Image 1: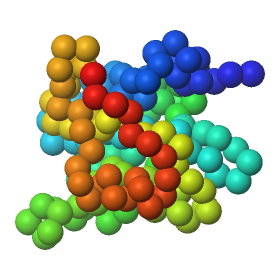
Image 2: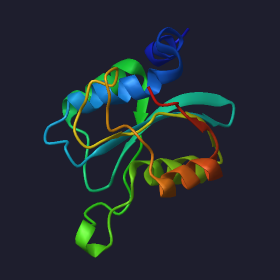
Image 3: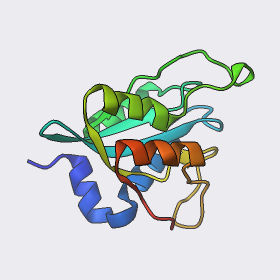
Image 4: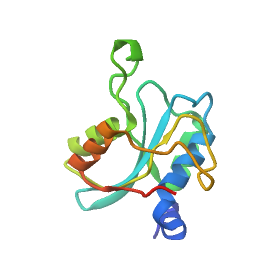
Length: 148
């Protein structure tokens, strides 16, 4: 039995995770400074989809409902409440990498994180993974989806 995310992956191809991350971000309130990341990971014998957000933000109920409908697991944020003035809160990828490492897993595929405001990703977006988080992805494994 395929999850809805597995079906999305087949239907939308090489940009599937980024398109879904953009859709989930669009359901958010005041998400201008938030980054949403989705990854396909392997933990033990299980492959699953996980979503993370930078620790200075958080998912709302509509976003959680959509992730649940799609079969995406929300990863907890670390160091909640840390502000930019204090050196910055962990990025979505850092929260997700901690989750993957703690469970002895590895990343398989990562979205181009949806950063800042929501944009139509078919016509251009602010979807990218910063240098520090690209290094994090290299350590836990997986590839980042290509740009549009």
